[in-house]
Length: 71
Image 1 (cartoon, one colour):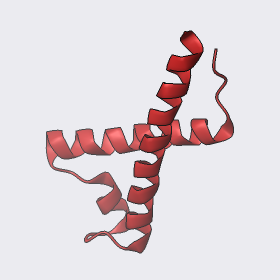
Image 2 (cartoon, one colour):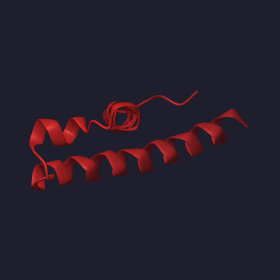
Image 3 (spheres, one colour):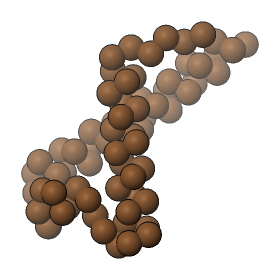
């Protein structure tokens, strides 16, 4: 079984935050990151979006690692 390291845990949290933000946008047309950091999204907001995207890539790689460990 694959053991989560610190980067994987941080990535999982960021992916959950990103998913919740997308859910709020879809359901209520409310951008939580934009509301917290100001609209239009400033530099800090863009960095958060980039980190969430990188976390998604890390979670995809984690999924592939886990798939290999189950074989």
